[in-house]
Image 1 (cartoon, rainbow, N blue to C red):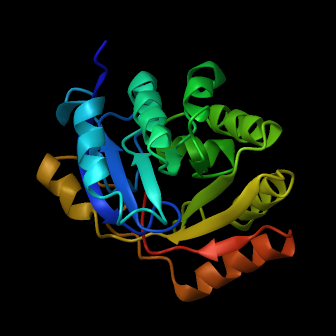
Image 2 (image 1 turned 30 degrees about the vertical axis):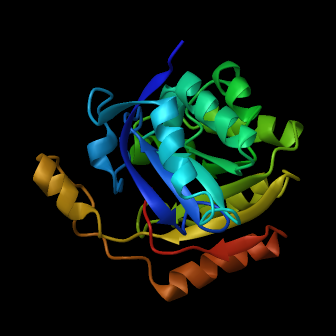
Image 3 (image 1 turned 90 degrees about the horizontal axis):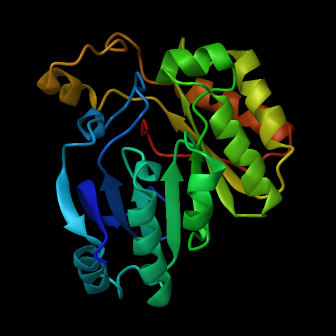
Length: 248
């Protein structure tokens, strides 16, 4: 049976979503409504372009020599809205010797993600806040599914990068950062935690789509804020990395 999915776009030589040079697939549809999303045009599940797994693999293999020290990352939107599609893309990538990375908010169930993880080399897990009330304010959803997935990835020893977007006056509370640091320090599968400074580079998309952008007056995270945040994670023994200015 031909497996199809809906994607927003692809980036053929990405450098921000996993190790090395990567072919990045942005899937269409997302259950979260993050206040700082830089891909709000990925929200609706009916948008984007329908494509078969074989069509996508054909495109990926054109870049195999370029991504041989990197791989394929499926991001979004939220890839786990299309688990069968993602699993089949990853299965065929592994068949061709290509490294695979799943970039997810974790807003899914263990039952849905298990078959995908079978063919996933690395998980990029976005933990957007550790205080449940702040997480709901940021995303409109509950935090617990993400923490449940984080614990499961620890249990199965799946290599994971945690990603945290530092937003002034939203996610930068000391209690929030220390809570996340304490939690991540209990997980022995975390290869790195990326602190991603908030920026305004995606705000124009909100205006084009007619969406209300609540963070239009929020300044970018300063170098001092980023440094202080990194130091909190380091103090807990968390392998931390200052990522590029990106909001997920």
